[in-house]
Every structure is written in C-alpha cells, then in structure tokens.
Length: 313
Image (tube, rainbow, N blue to C red; front, side, top):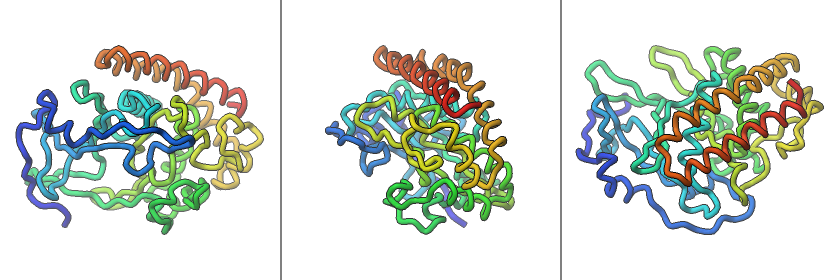
C-alpha cells in the first residue's frame, strides 16, 4: 500500500504568499526559437494539499499532495500569463466533454491549481496514491523522447496502448480522438505522449487518466510551431487538411466518418464553452492577463473555424 499517514505544514495560505512563492518563482530567461513548454526546468510547480477548509498546506516529507500549484512560467521570456492560459483551456476542455483534471485560477499567486487525479481517500481519512504510468513509460520510451519527432510514441502507438490497457477501450479511444482534435483547435502544440497516462481505478480496472497540461502554446512567439504528433504525416497544424483524415483513421483503426463526427461536435461546442471559461477566469485576472484572455479567445475561435474549413466537419 502506497502512502502513509499525512502530516502537513500549517499556515501556507495563499494570502501569506512568501512560503508558497519561494518554491515557485524562478529567474526569467531567454526563449530558444522552437522551444517547448515542457522543456526541463521551464515550469515551476509546487505540490500542495487542500481539504474542506480550503486552506492550502505544504506536504511534509513523502506525504501525498492533493493539488499541483502552477504559477506563471518565468523562464521562457515570451511566455506570459501561462497560468491564466492553462486555466481557461483546461476549463474549456472539461466543458467540451473531455475527461479533464479539475482546475481553478488562484489570484494571489497567479497560478493554475490542478487537482491530482491519482489520489484517493481511505476510510480513515488519509490519502492514498493510485498507480499511474504515462504513455511514454508504457511504450518503453525514455522520458526525454516524448515527442513523436524525437522518437516518442505517435498517434497509432498511443491508440494501441489504450487498447491494450484500458478496461473500456472504446470509450477512451473516443476521448483520445477528441483530445487530438481539441489540441489542434486550442493551439496546443505541446500535447505529447507523456501528457497522456493510464491509471488504476479504485476497485479494479485501468482507465485513461483525465487530461492535463492543456494550454494554447501557439499564442506565444518563439515556441515550436509543430504539433507534437504527426496527423496523417503532417506536423504543421496549418497544413492539416481533409486529405489527412483517411491516414489518421487507418492509424487509429477507426472509420473516417467517426473521426469527422467527433470533429463536428467539437467545432460546435468550442465557441460557447470557451466564452464561458473566459468569463469564469477573467474576474480574477490582473489587467494584462485579461488582455491575454481576450487574445487567447480570439485565437482559439479563429483556429477552430480555420481547421473546420480545411479538415471539414
């Protein structure tokens, strides 16, 4: 059994700030052309625990946390208000019907706070850890080869892993197809296989984990303009078109009509739920982050419309 009784440092409230921020702030550096958000060291994070009283606490030692606090990225100079970006895109994905980790935007630390999906409550009130493996691990790929171009699993390999491990492969393959299409609409070029995981479900079975690390990377200049996967041999989102659908369908062992139907549903769902997500997060944002939210909304709406016109619904 993983996990022990949990002991937490008290008083690490968001309003207090310094204790939390000292673990999250890093120096701002120059961004390399074509950089990836998941570049080692680019994102500072802190593990925290939040219970019914709403007070965040720092876990002591190896005690399991309940949430991950992700402040704005500081080490990529042209990436701004990444926490607001991630919170909006994650909320949009959830409202589109994708199984997505729960998030909220925390105004005092300007962070996206993500509830861990690999935790469960024991009868005695303590937390336990669920066993999970990302798809790079399950594919036997070393952790620094997460992108298909670098030797990581592609769409076909990810689909086969889901088929091999999932207790409900049909349901979760549909979610996987929706995730691919959503990332193309949202401008998330960092949607690699390490951002997919299989997790053991309490009571038995294995499931595709809720999606996480969703944000619009194409909004930022200098980041990679290539999608993490090849879609019908195309990696530039702007070049993906209707003619790539049959190849994608063959790789996934699905009917092209099914993929088209998923695309239609997402294209119809995206505009209103994106607007709703922006409305939820915007009141908590500083002025410059509100500017980001508006640009993000306009970019994703434009990308969704252009993709639907090229690929077909």
